[in-house]
Length: 275
Image (cartoon, rainbow, N blue to C red; front, side, top):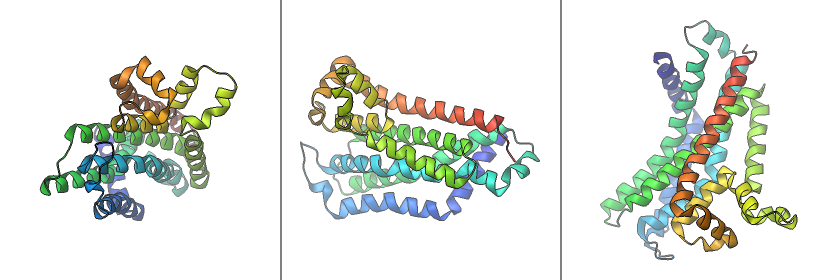
């Protein structure tokens, strides 16, 4: 446990000194500031006002930029240390491979999620100070969804990083994964499956297997309980599992995907040629 905590603390300290973390923090902090500057908290859409409206927009922006940030900053962790010769030094210390690998992942999760949460928390505190009102139930669910999404792509990043032999290959793989998932982000892009006369339930299941799609659909569900924008797919989701059941799925599925991907990456890392 001590080695695990030290590995996590070391990765956090290293990331906080990196330039990418400053830029990463400025992006999410700047988004919230711009949303306040443009008066988004004073607008009204489908009954959503105040911080609720800002959170809806913020969560939609996170769908586009959070995964690629997490992937690009994570895939260099194992591959970069391999190229820099860190493994030779690490193996000379009393640090187990499992403690180093999982400590690095937890430390990286802390770093990538902290700016996202602080931006939302800062918006909530400002809303309380300005007496705009804070929907704490919505804030809690959105925070849990962001935790799930971040963990999912962090697991993908660790897997790619462990499998790749160089940081350049790892970054290329991360970008291709993000691009593939982005192409299948909307159910309408699965029209070819419909043309093949697949059952609607199967099409929806394939689409929701994409963590980006499950996250986005959960955000839509919180914004529009009837999910009108999804068309017939909404009936499949609501009839099969209901709103609460789908939210539970949207929280659990990305967490499971990220854990399985990270575990697979650890298996490759443990069996690979570390030096």
